[in-house]
Length: 239
Image (cartoon, rainbow, N blue to C red; front, side, top):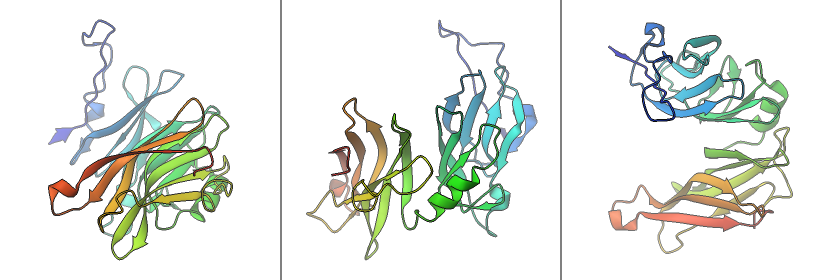
């Protein structure tokens, strides 16, 4: 048996013995590892994982499990389905954007991106809006602009078993921002010399509002020499 673990260090790098998360109340996890850790303003901690059981957990400041927010996705997918959560982003209003690989979330039909209210309940209005927008896109990373708009990066299916790198922008209420790119999405064929796929794994905002996206070309290439790193910068309007 393996158990989920998380340690906290003091400022001098020594182990914080007052933080007791490594036991996690003896919850048994299979194939467990942590993808992302988010410290909340109230001292609580959000962790996301690729476990077969609980993918989103909130801890108290001392590391104990906050059972008020403990999301089990594995048992809520289609038979044989698999789910994971890889990223959470805290909005200034306390709501939580959750990005992952799932088709259902706490009983709701959902694809890749949801938003939770501060109390952990589903933001149903956001879910309805964003569910109408996300189709073939695979979201890898999420960030929030100062004006509350949401930038996502990843890839989108381009036909012929190929994927192109893509970024999209959503309004704060979850609708695609039609002033960005083409109806809210900008798709980029980064490596035009091969017939291979591209994807983004990261996205960041510059101080001037321009958008940096990083990722990979030559995705799933047979020859390792066809796999290359990619860094692309977009204007504020997605051009």
